[in-house]
Amino acid sequence: MRRLFGSLRLRHLVVAAVLLLAAAWTGTRYGPDLTKSPFVLWDFRAGMRFKALDDVAFRQTRRRFFCHEPMERTRLCELRTTGIHGFINVFVDRAGRVVRLQFYPDSESPRMREEGRRLAATWNKVREGVADERGPRDPIIKTRWTSPDDRWGALMRYARPEKTPFDIQLIDRGRMASAAKTSAMAPTILVLNAVAESTDVLPLLDDVTYALKSIQSGRAMDASYETPVPASEVLLPACERVRLQLGTKTGSAHDSLFAPATISLLEGALAKAYRGSRLVVGESAWLVDSSGAERVRFGPIAVEAAAGIVAVAVQYPSRSSIAAVRLRGGRPGAFCRVPAELLIVQSLPNGELGYVHRIPIAEEAVASHISRIQIVPKSATGEPAHIRIRYSTTHGTFRWMGSLDWEGVIAGDPPRLRSRVPLGFEQIAEQASSRKAGTLIITARSERSISLGTVERHDWGFATRAISVPVAPNGVLDAVRMLDRLF
Image (cartoon, rainbow, N blue to C red; front, side):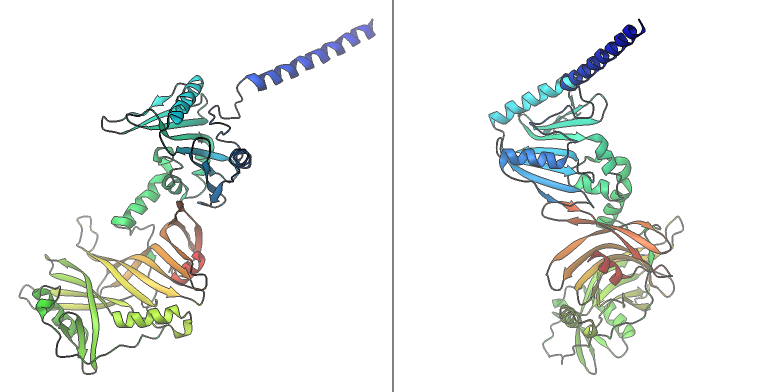
């Protein structure tokens, strides 16, 4: 009897196991798979492995995706389709998974219109699509689909009044959120490459967006970005002055771009700042002394009429040409320096000159150039009066030559350049003639180093790199070391 009951129990267990396996197989075949996106475009889904997607595309088109790296260990890939002609763009995360797939058809063909209707009907079975709110003049219609668990998404864009989608997207929302947190610059790069919408990554986007807008058009200096200026230790010899004998045909003050009152002010200021020299202005401007004449270039100019202050940049084109030739030679031992200078002049109510300050800008560089000057009066909140300048510095080694853009603050008595923020860079390799350029954002800082993120534009889209640059004990961010890390 016991053997019989034992045999029956064993049979029951075997039958139960078979039934469970059958139910599991049936659910896998016919039930929803919560690990996969329910939104499918042909054989493609968000969340699938990129290698599998690439293999499927190759079988259908005999082509492989062509990829670039917008962020470290991620890929932005594209492929031209052959069935319905267009482009597929894919963003692949660090795990090799498809985070967002976008299809852009070439034309509004009847076949594409029918395919759009079929996809929308299929996706509506998962969850009804919702159209974005739009104004009466908004030409774009957007319809979004989201899975019941909010993990997966799909989107179609239409150009009114047509019903043919010009943009179809599949999104892994979970992986998109994770990708946006991989670095301080990740949300910005995702939005710039149209991989993510700003609303997807808005909480993470604010700081970098503010910094980028400030660099482009506003005030970039902020306490969290501020770095000290190197001490005036001259490391390179000054470039020799190119002096000519000034001819008799110099033109007149009326031939120049300056107003007569400005010319008169500059004549007095330069005679005071450059002892033994005088300014001659005609079709060009010349600084003349007993040994000859050197061409100078003025600008930009900023005026604070209420305080009677004029700030003007002074550049030396002939010396700058010499510095550029030696820099291109790639022999640091032959480099020379030619800093731009800022001339700050006070004009008294009686028309006489008050103080005149001559401030060299970035003497540690091969060359510098001032592009913008802003005189900031004392504010109601107690911020002292100061001058902000945008300027570039040029540097080089035997491997590369490059430049950095800065915003600097000139303040104090006597005034001098006291702090600065890096804004952008450009770099050219000596041998390969390759060029890199982009915007710089300080993303973190400590006592020993400063972390920088880049925003670099390419033909295919935008990319970012993260670098950490050691700082000197006094907190100075060395320009050559920064460019060397970017090389």
